[in-house]
Image 1 (tube, rainbow, N blue to C red):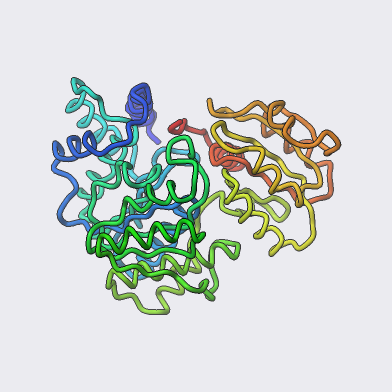
Image 2 (cartoon, rainbow, N blue to C red):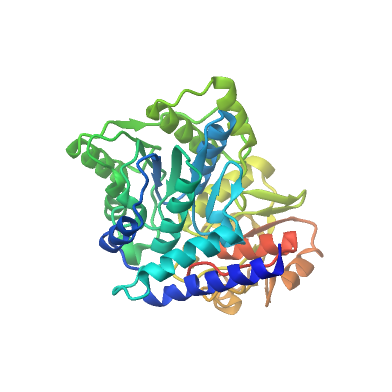
Length: 406
């Protein structure tokens, strides 16, 4: 990258990250104000809107890959990024460029500098994305919710289909303490008369989704069996995610041949989802109890009764004790480490959550953790947080890690 472009992108992103000072505002009024000022969203776009607790990114990746193989242009909006901000905003040809980030953020900054309340990081990022997709004349946009659904900034769109992945207990301080309350927030993306497709859910969550869909006259499809085709992503849970993606596309009426669907599923890639960094090292961003349970099942499916040297870095605001309890049966030993995110819990604090007789070591960074792990014969499993996974992936690729939204 040209040094001047890199400097300009850094300045633009520094300003954007600075808007985190304004906090997170759940609600749509300010989002609508910002998008209206930019004449967004474009009427040319048709949306596929995806909410849920786990699997959102994978479902979006499957849908995007199938559309790409079907020759259909589509934008993809996801969060958080793992290494670089540009990952959040992409299409079949690549990500938004540094120059486009600078130009887009410059327009939004000039427009909003005197606003009270000021748009948030996520609202600005969404506006930047929708503007970029409009400039590229993309007919389809796949939108992953940031948090919840009902009050998430992405919920300003009226989609062709609403998609809800498995719902579990996460972000309970914001979304509610029970599955029913969390499901009600996720169900907030269901629009009157707009089809909704969901995966099998816990009965408590399914009751809420069914009720909301009926009240809003939204035809509800529940995926009944996992996909049986070869997939680019590993794990039985990904077979369900793939089936959900295919069902959502069929509801939209998009015409894609079976062989192009199969090719799209086979070629799907999505980092830090049971990703094999090398033949002995697996990286997974399991960041809540439900994701940890899915990770254990995937591990046992792939490696049977083998146990792992488990390298773990945790973020604040999660039920870390529950995650550790779920992972314990596949852990031969623990290596706890910190990472650079402000949300990183200290490895000492996390280590104290496992039994005293567990084999455990504490390190300061991923380099030290990998060096210790190399002395043991077991496979290595690196997990605990998507932010941690991003740092590991940047280390693996020897590239610079950008901040994420905290």
